[in-house]
Image 1 (cartoon, one colour):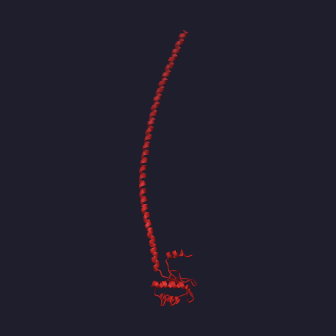
Image 2 (image 1 turned 30 degrees about the vertical axis):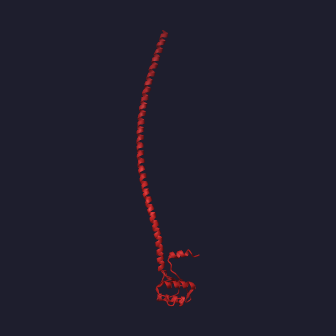
Image 3 (image 1 turned 60 degrees about the vertical axis):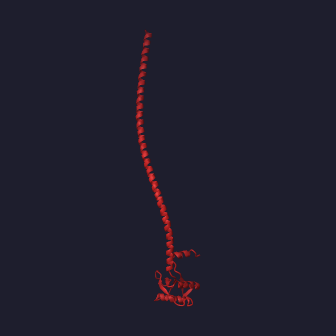
Length: 217
């Protein structure tokens, strides 16, 4: 009896163990299916999100390509315009140099010699300085008073007593006489009129004076 009862108990235990193992396997299988389905949903959502982001990135890259293309085109246009401007500026610089030289030459031609004189008063300035040149240089240089178109003081404040007088600008009617007066005044060196020193020099424009000063040591 005891042996038979023990066999029945063992058979019952084996059945119980077999049933428990069968339920556990089914649950594991169901859990595995659930997890796989959950992963599939998550992967699908992730892929869709990645696909949307990739589409956005591709759209952004396409926009950037378009912008870069436009910038390159505009840069090319600007480079061409700059080349044209540089060529124009170069031509204008050459013209400016030529025009400055021309203006300087015209201004130099319009100027006449001038000399400094102090302590002299006169009514007819042109006649006075015409005769003064004869007295200073001598009749052997100027046989008669030279013809002057104009004689006027320079644009400077009236000097005080004891200061050097303002320069007087003489405009000769003939440039040959002008050259003669300048040449002879250089030969004589010091010129005096009633004991007063007189300086005669040619009236150059500022540009020519600047160039001449470069050769003065």
